[in-house]
Structures are given as structure tokens and as C-alpha cells.
Image (cartoon, rainbow over all chains, first blue to last red; front, side, top):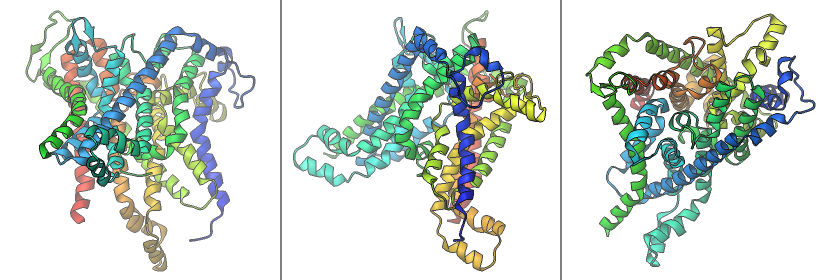
Length: 278
Length: 293
């Protein structure tokens, strides 16, 4: 290896980091500015923050209900996908079923298809077919939890498979010999051993569900609207309230930023279906 | 015993398969079925009427749809190629020795976890004329007027740059992983033999990282073809139809017009085109390699 000057690397990557961080920083700056200041010369350094936008967003009952919907839908979906994904992976990993590799591969094609294509059929099915009497699946939290499974469940299966495969089969067998039932083996022997993988899957599916916009915008009207749709609503109806828009964006961004540190190493592997370990 | 275990396996898989059937498979067949009908619940005749391949005949000559396809293709080409080049250069720059690598890497990963709609919102705040910081300084320093609300090239370029900002980190990180795992011997040998940098890149580095590059291109391509949220947020498909990608087109055209039959046809064609693109990519990039191996 040639001897290299470390300064160049540091300077270059500081510049790259600046370009990466500046748009996010700017979002925060806009969110703490009163509307009148937006049109004057941009100030790069924050001075005298104004918290009016935050008070306004937090005080808005509609937006608070959107926030609650977002939390319920993403949490419900993440738990459902992680648990079902774990069961599916256990079946694929332990049992010698015919065609299991095709099933495994088929699940992932659900994740690859463009979501926009499914908007119309899901809208029509959820309005007319998936209903009991007066009750329709459209615009319900449970409906959104199930719809998000189309992309999150394949993802959960895809990321959990190596974890479940990595638990030695001998452990199952030993537990069976001790007289444990299949259910006990799955829930009390294998499940706890998979905890790290399950945690990563739970967090990433949660973030994906939290971030989703297109399906939520089409398949909800009022009852199950999420924070991301609230953001776009605010822009189209009262397009000039830039500070509020920035503040809702910050609210939407915060949970992702909080969990970012925990899953940072797994994001790349997650986004590339494990093709690259990152 | 063997049968009982098989049953348990299917029992564990059943919920997954059921959900994916109702929300993945059935919608697919349903949209194909509807695409052969004319159906607008708010038209004079609100019933679903079979009209054969009429919708498909219409779509071939539909300028709005064809425009959205060509805009999407242009966007995908610009975005993915730029991301590949910038990502490779950044990955190479990361291979030098300097302190603080872990921090820089963490910062670089940050955009990947952001919601596309938030990315759109962030860039809207930076580029909207009269409040955006980018048009402000372009005007003040270079006297360039940038208005994404009226200028089609400006809107298109902003979307490409936004996508580069959002997704280049993915390319960088996958390529860093590939570069780190390369053995040093071939490079030392090539240097001893007097190969120059360009020769080393084309004949040693590129062939060795090719699998990672192909995988990355594949994933970026699929995601770029799906892009809707951030564009919807930033430009809403405008000005005119300059940034109306196929996803945006479906979103904007089908639902307000409630033309469900024709909308289904658009969805089917988009899905078909996506599959064809991915298949072509697979055949041209992956198949020759596996034959060689």
C-alpha cells in the first residue's frame, strides 16, 4: 500500500457528509422559523428558534390522530410480519416440504412488484369484495396492517431465513427427546435464540410501514389516515404553510432517526435482500 | 410422524400464504380481469362491460401514457447511471486510510432510512422559488433563474439530483463491501507488471466486483421504476407532464377519473414492462456470467 495523507480523506468525506446532512439540517431550520422570515435572505445559522409550528402541529387534533394511526398501523404490521415471517422461516428451514424453495422465491416477487400497479385492484377489492355487510376493509387500521404485509412480510421472511437456518437442528431434536411439544420447541427454544435477528426485522419492517405513503393515500379516507398522508394533505390544501409542512416532516422523521443507530449496520443488507452484507 | 410434521409446516406457512394470496395474488388476477372491461362507476353506464382488447388498443396510441413511459425511462437511466458512477467514486475514496471512517459511513447511511415522501418534502423546501435556498443562491451568485414550477428541465433535474442524494449511499455501501472483500494479490501483481490505473479498473477491479454491481443495479432499477412518493410531493408530476412517471400517472389519472377499466389496463402494462425490463437485465447481465462460471 502507498502511504496516503489522511487529511485528504477526512476533508473529502467531511464535504460529502455536509452534502448528505445539509438538506436534513435545512428541514429543521425551516421548521423553527416563523412564516414571515421564510421569504427573506436565508440564514444558514440558526438563531432565535421559533417553536410556534411545533405547538401548532402538536395541538392539531387531526394530525395527532394521524400520528396515532401511524403508530398503531406500523407497530401492528411490524409485529404481525415478524411473527408470521418467523413461523414461515421455521417451516421453510426445518420441514422437507415439496416446492418450498419456489414458495420462498415467490414471496419475494411480491416485494419487487411496483406498488402503484396494485393501487387500483386493492382499492376495488377492499371497497367491494373484502367486506362484511356494511363493514369494509377500506379505510380501516386492520386493512392497512394487512395491506402492508404485501411488502413487509416477504421482507421479514427474506431477512429472517438466515437467522433461523443458523439455529442448529440438534437443539430442536434435543428438546423433542425431552418430550417438548412442537409449539414449545418453536416458541421456547428457537424463538428466543433468534432474538437479535427478530429485533432487526421488527425495527426495519416498522420503519418501512411508517414511511409508506402511496397505499395509505389511496386506501384510506379519514379513519385510518397516517402521518405521511397528513403531510401531503397539508401541502395541497394550504400550500403556503411551509413551516408546518417542515414540522410534520420532522415529526415523521424523528422515529426513523431514533432507531437508525440500532439498525444502521443492517440497513444495506435489508435493502438489497441480503445480496450484500454492507 | 413424517406426515404430521409436514402438516405442521403447512400450518405455520398458512397465515403468510393466505395474506399474500389476498393482497398480492388476487389483486393481480383481478386487475388483469378488469383490464379487459370498460368500467366507470360514474359514467352513463356504470356496469362492467367486457370489451375485449379495446383498452389495450387504446393504450398503444395514448400520448399521455407513452409520455409517462418515456419520462420514466429517461429518469431511471439518468438516476441509476449517475448513482453508479458517484457511488463507485465515493467507495474508492472510502478505501483510503483515514480516521473517523465509521462516523462518515454512518452519516452516509442516513438518507436510506428516510421516507421517500419526506425526501420530497425536504427538497421541495430547498427548491421552491422564493423560499428555497438553492434558487436563491443560484440567482445571487450566478444570476441563474431556477423555477421547478414552470421549467420542465429544472424540475426533471431536481428529481434526478434528489434521487441521487437519496440512493447513492446504497450504491456506495454495497460497492465498499465488494471492494473490501477483494484479495490484494491481483492488484500487486498488476502493478508489478506495470498496468496503469485504467487497465487495472477495466481488467481487474470491474470483473471482480461485477456481481455486486449487477445486484446493486438490479435493486436500484426496480426501485427507481417504482418511484412515486417523492415526485408526487416535489412536483406532482408537473410542470405539465414533464415529471409524470408511470406510478404518478396511475395515481393522478386513474383515481380522479374513476375510469377503472382503462386504469387497470395501464396497471397491467406497467407491471408487464417492469417484468420485461428486469428479465432483460437478468438475461444480459447475469446469464452470460453464470455460463462462464
